[in-house]
Length: 117
Image (tube, rainbow, N blue to C red):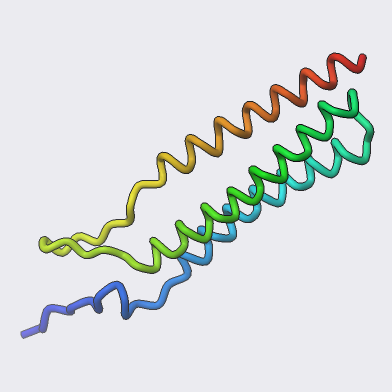
């Protein structure tokens, strides 16, 4: 007779999900920093608007790094429900907030470029 194989609790299972999550958020932050560098060094648009957009890009990049660290920590601290399901808290708020901020920065960049031409 075969014995049912019991899986180890999530805390004992090795996994890289938390690290992959942090790296994904950090890649997004790196993209924003690249956009900020292009705005700063390519001299696009008026000075004050350009500097404000660069500051917004850098601020959002720092926020994304914070989100990534927090999400990675939450994934590493998985919750097991009494019925045996393992869940991770929803990231909807962070994703929607980051998306809205990135869209606002993109629109601002577009306005600065259009005003320059």
